[in-house]
Image (cartoon, rainbow, N blue to C red; front, side, top):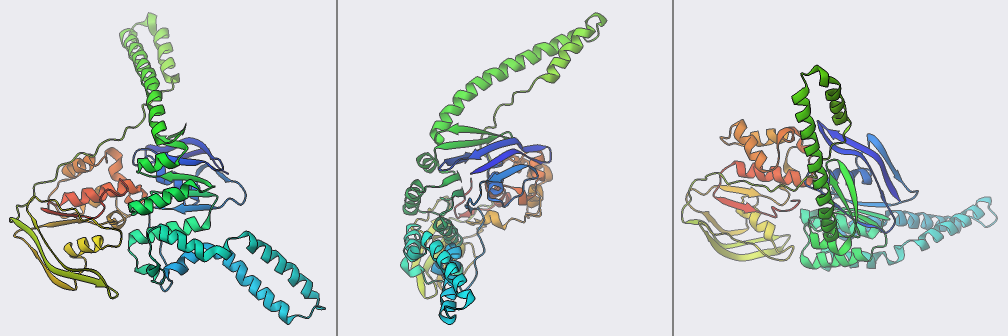
Amino acid sequence: MLAINQLSIQFGSKHLFKNVSVRVHPGEKIGLVGVNGAGKSTLLKIMAGVKQVDDGVLARSKNVSIGYLPQEIATFAPGRTLFDEAKTAFAEALALQKELDQVNHALGQVPPEDPGFVDLLHRQGDLQHRLDQSDIFTMDSQIERILLGLGFTPSDFGKDSISFSGGWLMRLMLAKILLAKPDLLLLHEPTNHLDIESLTWLEDFLKNHRGAMVMISHDRAFLDNLTTVTWEISLGELTVYKGNYSKYLVDKENRMIIKRAAYENQQAMIEQTMKFVDRFRSKATKATQVQSRLKQLDKIEMIELDETENTIAFRFPPSPASGRTVLEVEDMSKQFNGQPVFRDLSFSLQRGEKLAVLGVNGAGKSTLVKILAGLITPDSGDIRFGHNVTISYFGQHQAQELDSRYTVLETLSHVDNQLSVTQTRSLLGAFLFRGDDVDKKVGVLSGGEKSRVALAKMIATPANLLILDEPTNHL
């Protein structure tokens, strides 16, 4: 149903893809895996038609429909309710219904003996048949089922869609894709922003999805329970493994044992060859043999070991010492559109304490941390910070606020700190940006890479109070 042939993409000196060819077959449930920056997001965009192929061919079967969930939040039109926005997933069927209404009206105005009457009858029959094949007659019940499954409540249905937070808008995007019932789902981190109830519902829904699916997810259990095939991107190549994520890990390790042995044998052969060359390079009687050995080396296809997922390793820079009491909140209240988020909230935070904010989606967790970070104001109550408290805030969509025009190095250099260029490069290296990686534009980075840049940017400025809202998303 979809095929990529001889795909090649290069950024600077790095090959993102080298002659990659792969196919998606009907009904396949595919997990797309690889280290951050391997090219997972790029491949998904190419399959969705969002990114054009410069070198290679993308082919789709005729009439294959695709539903793509990106990392970025879509822009929604103001003045449209949540329920009406979900209805746009049925745009084609609604257009058919509108045309059928117009044809029915025209039939009432045209006498049977009119030459155009028969044409209208034929058009009416065609439209009615196409509508019968659609799901428009169960549209409302489908919308309700999927919105409720993804955590919305009936009271949300009449709210303006743009009044929802980013996490809820991502759910709305996912709902519209599921309602459209595409032949191929392309899902980028679909479990981000979902609570356990919504995640469980989505897993059950996707198990029953008859179409094909390619999914990127950091949730191993989610991948294990849904996927039947695993695609791994490494060193510009794509390897297909049969089975889910756990099966892939076992098969990959077995493959790597064989590959490491071949790599070590090849390295030993190269070392022996170079010893011979170095030893006899200056001897005229051995010149022919030396050249022969060098030609053999030139013809060897070098074995490269697969990329490994490096670990981010950093230390927080020294920060000024705060007073014993870092934060005091007293009788704080906040409401939106007359609906209370929290009332008379009081708590304190002492130096060295680590506070977790828990609650169901929509309970007001993000609102609370935004108030503490000074981004929004409470309706009432007092917030008092202790002596010498400095705040560093990482928002739920902090990575999206990076300026795509700057390079990774420039982004860190613009932070108001005392780091030298060498120190900035060292910090970026701790977040796995090394060599030419620091010269990449932020706009070409994957979601995981952007999150690492945003974290590095936050850490570059010393602070003694960290306020973090979903810092592990996309990592």
